Image 1 (cartoon, rainbow, N blue to C red):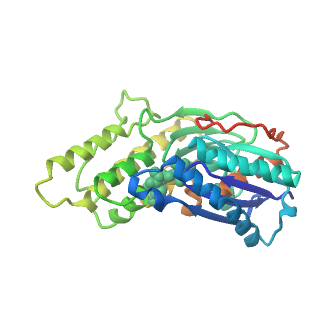
Image 2 (cartoon, protein in one colour):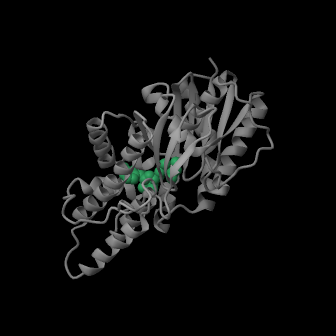
Length: 336
Ligand code: KG4
Ligand code: ZN
């Protein structure tokens, strides 16, 4: 079975994974998150430099953990987009260098397809057809997936403005919580009451597009609430829990509707926001009630990592998909 090295550098994580036949053999992850914290968001130039610094050590770590050597690698997959241009370029250039020097094929892969593929490591081969909800810092998309290696993806709906993760990050900033906001809100929401404040469930009205999302109005609603209650100490945990509930309710409602409408018996929930404890719990509850199989990767595989890129490369290699030429360009705004 071919051994695939996967490289992910689309944002602030330098992720390397080694996968063979749907099994993770070893991985390693470095993050420049702390270097961005004081800016309240990822600074592309800082992220790119950090990738350059971390990429070789992470490849060596992953190989060590897998008990393998460079000569054992049969193919290389690297994120070609979407992502921060300078960051993607570092990982793709590294992938090309490994491909060239080892004499093995290169796959430049789509970051979001990687998010979907990674669930194979936890739950085995993907079904022939399923609805996928990809919720990350840059994307919120409901998709109809077939064979990830061969079939085009059908977009059922995307976000009209902010991505779900972006909303978590912005609300966290508003509440004075650290970056990245999603995990911080998830943590503090455990001490809060999700019914304390009823925030809007955007785009869920009867005349709204059923699979489209919008989170900027929700963000404004939270900001207005905070503004109106400035004279008292802010109930940060209640605000966080109520906001999180609004997001979880909206995401899962639309995902379930898409499964029903498209006769899909499996929902694949992936991306950084799929690590959220309330999103996971509500998705589980609603899928169980509707007899839909929920597939959601373990939290550490939901956020950006190299294993997801290696898993997708492994799928492409197994399906005999032609590799990419070494002059392949990074595509920062690649669409799936
Ligand atoms: O998929 P990902 O690691 O990177 C992108 O491709 O964007 O997603 C990062 C996003 C960030 O916005 C982060 O705040 C959010 O995922 N996130 C979470 C949680 N963990 C990460 N959001 C809510 N709850 C979490 N536990
Ligand atoms: Zn991602």
